[in-house]
Image (cartoon, rainbow, N blue to C red; front, side, top):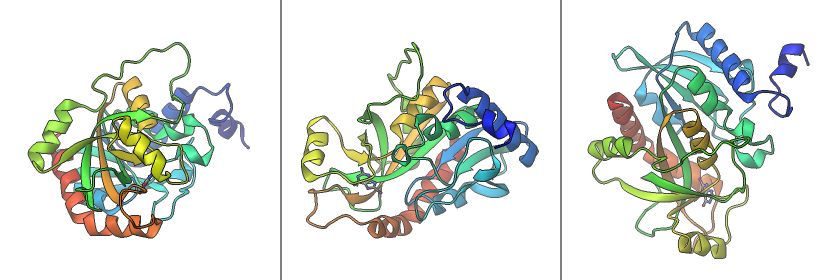
Length: 279
Ligand code: 8IG
């Protein structure tokens, strides 16, 4: 490892994760020639193509070229980030084609590094998307749902030290209203983040329901917490790619997830593009 790479090692407790985010943002500025990005988008399972309608990709950067970012670990995710011109507004979106999941074992700092980098790159808003299991039978695979709140069952926080961040209204009521203006049929739900990488048992899904959950997944909550700490306004959108275990008689498969994403790509793409255009 070079000295610079060592200094950017998020797994080293003596590394300042915010300094790595600043270094990553500096690379993004240099590669894009853009002093600031405005909105960040994290594209989860099923959302890969949805980013395309947001605008024209001006620059693509491999994650491996940016301090603190790793390779994509999930099939169907791309290991790069893009700088996208938002229509003709002169504003830029920083679009992440992949995320680091908590179950990869690289630590919470790696999970939220993209969020911190977005804030360091100038973003004031982040749209966090994911593919997830649905607890309400009326949500057929391919249904996008706004996240109204979350329950973090990872037993971890991205925040270090005695830093008591308020999470009231974490998922911006203003941005949810914008999304519902764009698509009045959008439902809202509480997202429950499990550690994964296994899907839940039917008993765990019943527990999530009893706790007040509507959606089950393996991402988003930790990222949203870090986003709030960094002062970003957060919009969370889940794509229900499958009924959660025990909700439907069918077993869960990653292929089903990818297919539901394909089928919903157009609706999700238009939703993202319209919302980002109005942020
Ligand atoms: I896509 O049913 C997707 N991700 N935990 N449960 C959990 N994560 C998911 C699911 C699901 N579907």
